[in-house]
Length: 254
Image 1 (cartoon, rainbow, N blue to C red):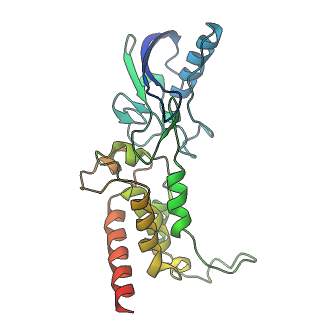
Image 2: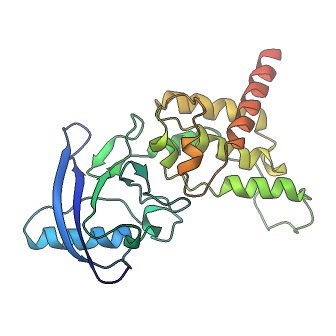
Image 3: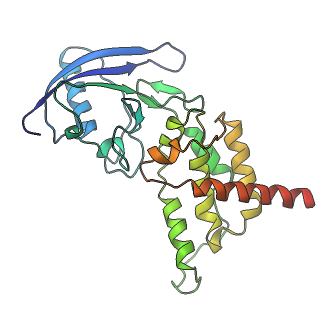
């Protein structure tokens, strides 16, 4: 695509979780196709400030697809139309001149709106605090060969650990389920020797916290893995279910 674009934006504006929100319409000209989606929002906010209006609040940090903060629901899809990318990795060349782009925050009971497009994802942190840790002695790093790990297990653990906790899985799910996120965090530890000490209780505690936060149930539609920017697989959900059932069986047998 050559030249700049003109776009119509429908952006969700909301003061806080206790107030009603709504869409506001903006017209933006001279948008370069080489801009990232967040850079386009920077231009929009500069325009709003020049007009004496309040800029749109949106979350961002690394802008390199690492932190997961850039959580925007774009034209009905978490992080926009492309697979395997976060919002900050989405570029305006994915849109056409004259397009209308609708931007919303994540929609989930467990992710209350802080302001505009920013949501509170502390519920993820509380799930991690419930069991996403290991008990190991601190000190100098061990030699690489001191804990032999099969390559297949290491690869699967690394794939699960790629989850950046952005919440796209929750936003994509019709039930606002967090099963993909929780299962990825459980899997990365269940597959490694360092994670065995808490294995019997980790899944039980993290699932209990997930339910307490108000996330919905999984009905296996696959939307979570389809929209995950790190393409976390649903095999992790199956593994989490096995871990959870094993923990329940162990605790009932005691």
